[in-house]
Image (tube, rainbow, N blue to C red):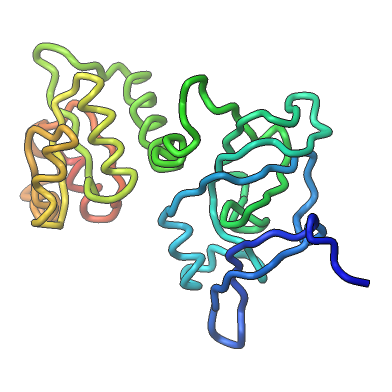
Length: 242
């Protein structure tokens, strides 16, 4: 009996073949989607660091194969048994193991739990939601945490430091901090990213090697009112000392 074309959709799927992880675009069936009470017609997803690891088979981001990567997505509800969502609603999904242990955003359809979804803000285009994506969400959560601990822009406030500023979360953090009124120092190891970071709003650029230099003592002079670190290791140690 021939397959019903309405039950088919395209997706980017990664599978393990012996020691290799191989990505390919394939035709998938609805019954391959995981359980969930909301079926979404996916409009956009974004490319995050975790997604790159999933596509290349590094760091065991994917827990089982085959898998559709994509840790975030935006789309339109197609079917729903959730009391919170109805067909036609524009929704965003990020996290909850999507793209890691259940099919994610790199397909035309996705099925998730309604409690994992948030509504696309009124007036925001779906493409913009994914341009901000998980990186922007993470950066904003970081700024909110800083402000909850008393860090705010204003006269006499030390600058905010962002490490790994050329990356996804770092770039978003620089832009969000600058637009929120903070003086931002961007730390990066990419010498060619100065113009880009200044365009985002950084007032100064710091080579990341400066933060990783061996310290003369456990603490240095305070330089930062707050920091968003995306690097860790010696860089984070340097941030905490100053």
